[in-house]
Image (cartoon, rainbow, N blue to C red; front, top):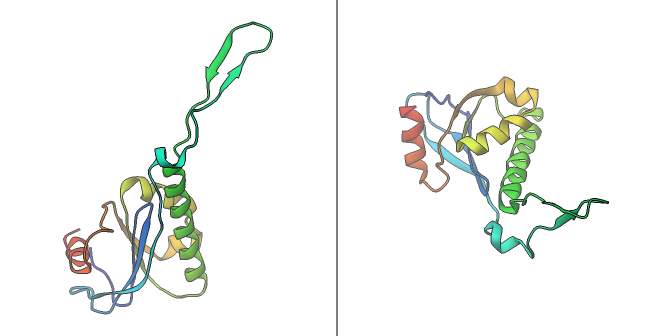
Length: 147
């Protein structure tokens, strides 16, 4: 995948996002970190205080089925992806970038897509469904070049 000069590359997952800008050319990207954000999101079990409740049925004398459990960790990752999409919207509306590439694992990419603003969609050149948030910038550059 070619990354045009001055394009913004967002590398994100449910806990970490990197905003990078290509200071090089399309053939030889030179990604510079513009912004980095990471949030603490403990495992689901560490966020729960109790087991899910049960609903009693009325009048039949039999107990109802258990409520489905909420995965608080996943909810927080989805919220973080929505915040990332909101940040992209604000930057697009300020004309902060002309072209955009998103790199995220499939689940995060799906959540981001739900929240893309039309201005973000118009500037989106490509998406790469990989988790590269823990990789150094030079490996991100190589992954983009190989895609």
